[in-house]
Image 1 (cartoon, helix red, strand yellow):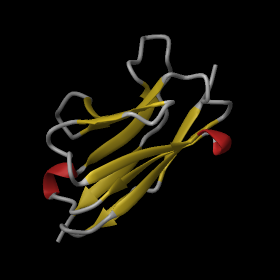
Image 2 (cartoon, one colour; image 1 turned 135 degrees about the vertical axis):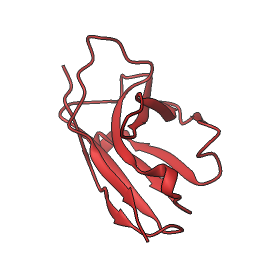
Image 3 (tube, one colour; image 1 turned 180 degrees about the horizontal axis):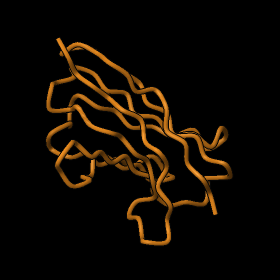
Length: 116
């Protein structure tokens, strides 16, 4: 089973940018779609974006136009470029298959905090 490790989070001011990475322990080329999710304090985990192995993408309305998802199958890595960050983007960000099942393990996530 592929293990996923998220990185790239941090403390950033509103309007700033961050690039998150999701590194897989094995090949992701056969996984049809990979996604980013986030969980804010006191809230349920929510969908952010997904990308298929062919490069098709879909975004949550709250991030469309500001976030860009991409994947490099050769490096077994997926990315999330986040621009024009807002305070409401504060959350722990996770990657996983899209859609995920109970059999798909979650990583530790990476914390993104917006603070002025």
